Amino acid sequence: MSHKPAVIAVVSLLLAAPLYAEVDLQTQPVVAEAIETKIEGEVMVVNTNTRLMTLKLADGTYKVLHVPPEVERLEEIKIGDMVTITESTTALIELQTGRDAGAMGAEGETQVTVEPGDKPAGSITDALTLYGKIVGVDKAAGTMTIQGAETTRVFPVEDAALLDELEVGDGVVAEFRNVITGEVTVK
Image 1 (cartoon, rainbow, N blue to C red):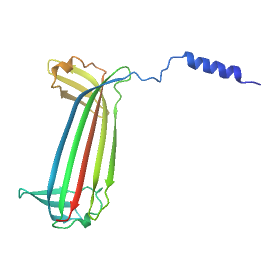
Image 2: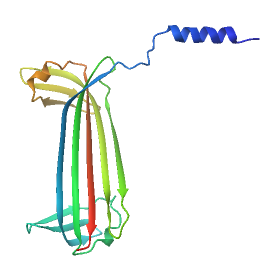
Image 3: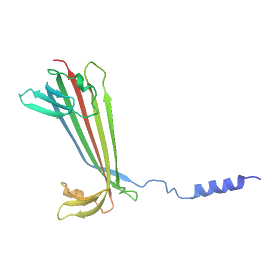
Image 4: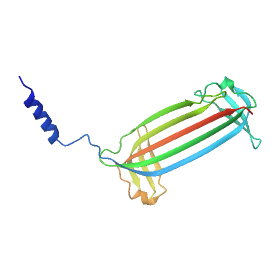
């Protein structure tokens, strides 16, 4: 018994049918921001039990830091060591339109990179993507209402011209990335 006619019929049906798996989604960046802060100082106190570290900054002030559990080899940081920590935070907010816009949810990931050396060094990167849907636009008030996976909130819109482009049902994607790099050196 040959299955050839049945296979040909299925292939013909698939080729003739519309492709529903195709995604109808257009993305437009709306806001992009980046902030970077840097702390440099001399280690004055390290408490490995509480994971607190006190730095004396160049201006003579003190800064108490909570060292996250991802940082290994905390016990190797000694009083008098120099610590440099840089934190970079970026945010990208995009507007999505099309029939597939408006998915809701969140995705997150943390990545730790340890640099080799005599003293602790490396980075912690947190990435978070939030998906929501516009459920209200109030041009008079200059706001939009976004429904997320767990909450619905009203946000001000600084650019009034953007309100003309927003429609109920459009999707909003907010991507946040926070990178903290640190290095300990001997004074």
